[in-house]
Length: 337
Figure 1 (cartoon, rainbow, N blue to C red):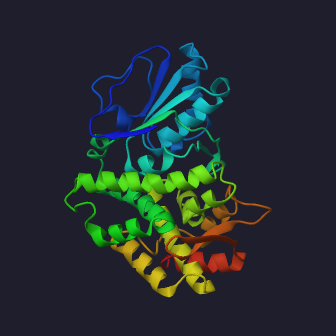
Figure 2 (cartoon, rainbow, N blue to C red):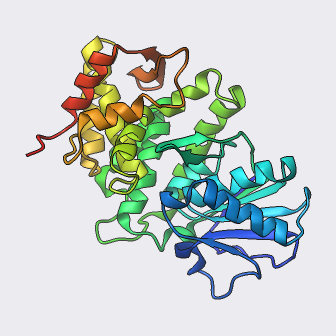
């Protein structure tokens, strides 16, 4: 069940409920429920130690399989709490309150849980849908524009993959989607975009809940993007910035192979650049990105299959020659001098 509103949700204080925050989201509330877990923000908490902190707190509270884990935070908190809930006594109850736009459209919805491992993004995880998700635009009002744009990159991705009308609506709104001076802009439009984005994702998830087929299309830009994130220590670029760069790499690859229509590739790339996402990045070596990509969890039979597009909502996966991938990555880097 997904609900949406503008007010901050009330937090329960029962002993059979465990709330998980990071220090950023805990600061949004004047008082936290007793025994809450508060993690350091960022990807450095998304690991075995972070999961153990949640599991230890649940054990110390005497929680059981019918107890409730509640994640209040961004993608890291949602992914990590969901992972802990999925393995605690082989599965406890789970509720998610995503506080970032990225988490609302990506991490919270679809049932994927994860921690990072071995320097790779989301390498260890489970499929474990939450029993409910609450979306509140009140959380979004506290976010800087860069963080909002991080989520917008994923929204654009979903539109490119599954809703051509939404894609054109976003292109018409363009770089003015979030005002340069800050704030959410047209909140009614944002809520409409949120629902339409989740409808796209829901179609892919219902058809392929454990990513054995077409749900893999939702990884558009992610193989390149995760490689960039890992190569730069999961801190220099936001996930949205890395994925947007990855989508531009995929569009470039498709154009070079004669798969992606020239006009669509140019328009989509120009749109992503107009939103402020870099087509070329500096200060990172292609070899480091490629090394991280080799560990990609989507590898099958020793090959990484990349999501490409012929045009809007016309998707395919294809393995690519490593030398060609290296050229595409190199093309997305500025000269490191």
